[in-house]
Length: 619
Image (cartoon, rainbow, N blue to C red; front, side, top):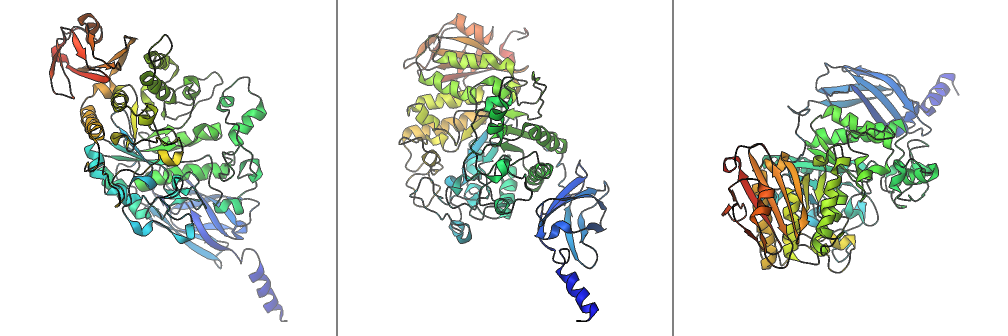
């Protein structure tokens, strides 16, 4: 064989020559970001041995990250501050190898300064598969498996992004200003894929919900109606159907070497000064279930990947915030880096973490501004207030005694001093992981309306689960599949419709209309957004508190008794001061504050007081 031909064959058989780029993540980036560094994760046969340079564009290769996986290469770029929108031309393994055009896009005007969700907002939580089916053509996608089966609680039911878009006018009319969707990225799993928490592609919208364009359209259409979009992210784990599990990008990409080892769920070990290190490791590194491999965020490339993925979705979809699943289960030092880097790009963005503990001290540990004894600091602005949720339901459901009923809510709020910023917490009566509040309150519609009034007026950012406005319930079990039932009217064969009112009973219509009136009023009442909070010891089945700003006050008098209660002038004066009159926003009636007030049974009485109706003494 001629020498030249032999050399050519050897060259073609070399690893570099066989390099073929299959995918690059993130798929594109933007000019004008605060952090000029961008790390590309490049997938391709034998790509790990390639050399990379920038042929065109204002960027340079700072370093290359190679792992024990020959089909993965991490390319650390530094983008010039003056870089414009256009394509970078990246050369892999030299001029005779492969050249890739990598898109750099222009940011939307004002992107960095976007407003995140805050106390002015009311969040509406939607499980997309169960809300509404707007496009039956995408119900099942053969390659993804797990086809639609509405007879199965844990099966897919066919809800999608179009179904949500079709109902945006209704949601806006109800007074909701933020939409939080359970995850909508691809879940290529054989079963239970409807919930979305087992991602198999972190950059792809699951086709059974619609297209990437549909998701961006949802964000734009919501914004036109004054609503923001909150994305649900899961940095702790992925689904076992993700290609990473079959071919880990690095040996330490997964905890416990990619082998199932269950978490002990002992979240206290993260901050427990007496915790055994094995217990702490089993909590943070253990897997939820065998089908959800636990990610090792201590790997710097994985940490960077997850941070950039969050930033990419914020920029790409114009998000107003993030909800972070299973917050404490990820590496805590990664979580600090994650929150700091995101907020460096979007200082006004909000993020809320799920730390499911009934102990305020456990939740407070994670909030931005908290001075912890172990020196740990995080930048997370908000967490879900699980202690308040449990106390609220108990307060309404239980008879009052020295340690039951209203006193539970009172004591929970009395512990607010442990938080760096209690007003920034996200409060709720139920969510997708627990029984519906209507069921928790023994299917009592009056008590359910009371819970909604309290969530709308207490300190914090209100969140309401879809269908609560029409008393959706799970009477047969606490199965998640039943809790996440179909929204009435979301499917063509439904006999009831939450929006039109078709088939709803009187209590459902009353509750829906009550909530609409309540939230529309709340949006126009700054005292409920940033007003001070003062509450009074419960007495005779009544819990009362005051929200006060410089221009107005809102007195809240909650009577859970089965009969009316007379609120004496002396009691009223403690709550409202020397103010003479108020307006009941739910009835429009003017209320005298100088004589006894009759509080209806199982009702929250709201009193909206203008400063003009009060003596000029500082509250």
